Amino acid sequence: GNFGQAMAYACRKYSKPLIVVASVNANPFKIDRMRKLGAEVILTGDDFDAAKLVAKEEAKKNGFRFVEDSSDVETAIGAGTIGLELLRYPEKLDTVLVPLGNGALINGIGKAFKENSAGTNIIGVQASGAPAMIESWQQKRMVSHSSIQTIADGIGVRIPVPIALEEMNEIMDNGILVNDETIIKAMKLIHRTLGLVTEPSGAAAIAALIQHGHLFKNKVVAVILCGSNITDEQFQNWLIN
Image (cartoon, rainbow, N blue to C red; front, side, top):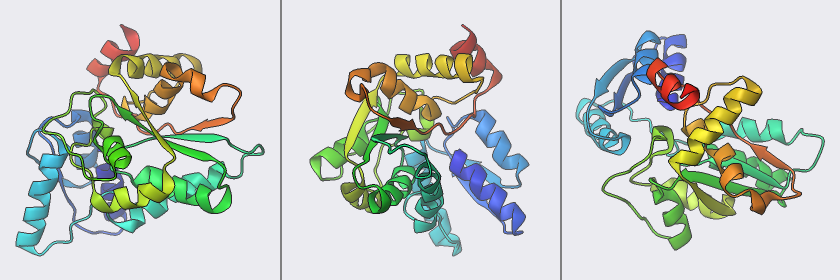
């Protein structure tokens, strides 16, 4: 969803046609935003990993370029600019908490830190109902799941991207899992104290602070908030009720 919107924005700016293949269960708010930005959106499969397989087949069949978040190096480079901004913080950061999806975000941010502040720990955060990336990183092999169970669809990876895992071996220092209940608590906390609306994936790093706060006592911690795509119904269910 977030990646699809970014691609749609860039393609519209440079007058390039774009087809986004998304899951039938994708956030309708994200689908609407992609279409308004000019993308043709095809809905197929129960999750984005299933949709990705269809996208690969369609691209091969039609001779289109297939662009995959975390596989194409440009996406990690773009994320790396966040790391460069954080490095300008006046205090040395002990830890950076990053929502972990396909890996582009953490690899880009982490690369900037490993080259300029090697002592900063880069920690990926996933939902406990979709732990494939952290499990793969821990076991040094591809671990996939037949399904996921989390409200954090933006980081709901079922089948890891191999090249992203290779990069993570050099970048990520630890991985943390958070449950959906704590993610909702984090979304409410962010909304109440900062006045910001975040989607579940975007609030995952704050959820890590709530659920595993003892790990970060007396440390200077940076947290990445990313994504604010929720429907009116989700807003009522997660932030108001």
